Image (cartoon, rainbow, N blue to C red; front, side, top):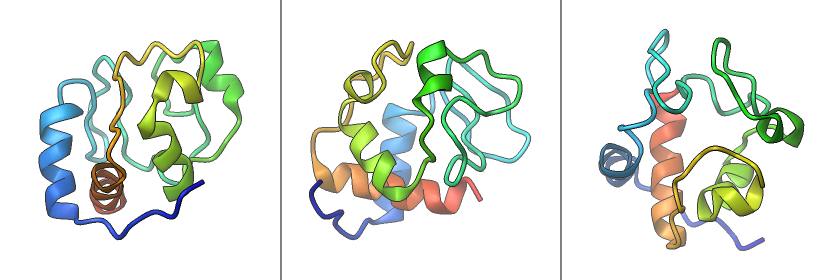
Amino acid sequence: MAAIPPGDPKKGEALFKQRCYQCHTTEKGGPHKTGPNLHGVIGRKTGQAPGFAYTDANKKKGIVWTKETLFEYLDNPRKYIPGTKMVFAGLKKPQDRADLIAYLEIATK
């Protein structure tokens, strides 16, 4: 896997608002939308946000979300977890993924 470049959380926030917010929230106790609330996602196993109806593919992936796993996942979610219901095509630019992760590291704590 390629090295993850340093991310800019401000740019990541803008990316989140453009590409992710329509399906996800980040605040503690926030609602699930089409996708799960992402509060606490870093350090959590796939398919484990309480109250969200995940696919079996997500539940069985069995990895913990880290900066590294998110970086790979966000490139092509359907390739990383075949059978996921997430329709997002991914972020092809490594810098965009790094920026989004930098934002998530702050926004989902």
